[in-house]
Amino acid sequence: MAQLRRLEPDSPSRRHDTVYSAWERFVQGEDDLRGVRPEIAISWHRCRDQYRVDPCLTAAPVAVAEVDHALEHDVVFAELGFRAAALTHEIGTTGGIVTITDATGRVLAQWGDQATRAAAIDANLAPWFCWAEGTTGTNGMGTALMSYTPVLIRGPEHWCRAFHDWTCAGVAVRDVVTRDPVAVLNVSCWRSDLPATTGTWLGNAATMTQRILRRRAQDDGVELMAAFDHARSRSTTPLAAVDPAGRVVLADDTAGVLLGIPGSTPAPEPAVRWKPELPEFIQAAKYAAKQAARNPEWTGSTQIFTRLANEPTPITFRPVFLSGHLIGNLVWFGRSDGDPLPRTAAGSPRPEHPHRMVATRDNRMVLLRLPEVAVAQSDGNDVWLSTDQGRLRSASPGLDKLESELSGAGFLRVHRQYVVNLSRIREVERRFKGELYLVMDDEEKTMVPVSRRNAPAVRRALAI
Image (tube, rainbow, N blue to C red):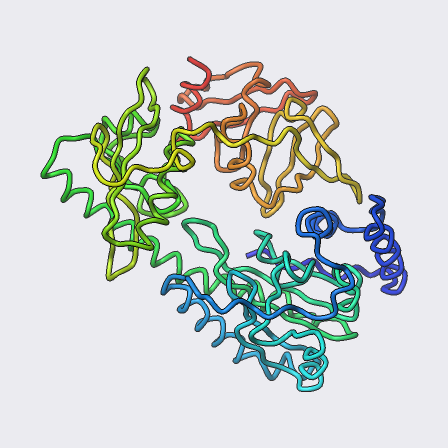
């Protein structure tokens, strides 16, 4: 888990004044964001242009009463509560408070310094109130839900003027399969800096909690493979087992060809499950998982265009449960049973892809046309772009998210650290042991390794 950025050694008052001046200009409609960190600037844009959050809001709104989440979310809440309670005394002695929110931004619990908790009441920083970014603007809890890395929000970096006396740091715990947020652990201080150990403590707490979800997901993968083997023994119809995110845990050889992935190659570990080369299939699998979670008796079917087929292929989804918990779907190819999926779930035109990518240079946001980008490379929690304007840091929080955004737009994942623009490949080099390297046509002639896992997809994409 990444650590929070350390507070810079420059003058806090000067930094405060610079950011506050930018905030004043921005809420009045100007776009001059000099001196504002890129992640904060992007959040402000969402608050002003997408959510239209009132910057004069003085307190968080009441949270909605409806609750709809899986049992493992409750396990995460309990684990985070245990870790937060264990540090309450240490955080409290420095004037801090600890909060836990669910995936919707609802505050579930709060511990810490009594004086700070009293100040928090005025802002509704307390249980039963909602701190999602879409309702309360840029803040440690809501913005962490939007980020794949820990966030630090200081003073006037908050969108709402009433919260400018607060400094907050938050980190989201995410489902290891769907990557959706489950909860946020947050530390806040009023009119003071956070304790020096905040970043380390948040990172460790989130990492330990994430391990619980990872172990559960791996066990689910093994059970899904067992369900596959049982179904395969009773039918010769091409079959695949997919998780709720549409990634394949196991497929027979025929289904593997149709999906563009290796057949008969188990992948129970969430981080290495196979991603089909068919966006429509992934979209349908996600829809099927949501339907099955609401109705365990649900089965559904649709038609998709698979690889090497000129006509759409009927497919049927049947959910697999373990102790009442949805672990994925079995998918039969060439069969059509159950409720038809709506056209918006599969077979419909693909969603419009972004015309530009957002990168950062110093304190500026750079808008890049897709053809300008040759390679995206992950480096820890940062993504770096090799572009016609040089090497720039992407504003996208993680290579997985960037890959999802660019799916079907001429970009391909060729390695766990690299996504490339297929139109910018100049040469393909084959090494002595069969390793593939791509030579890009950027100024540096970047050489990108192709993992053995991704080599078949690269060969198909380049028709070699």
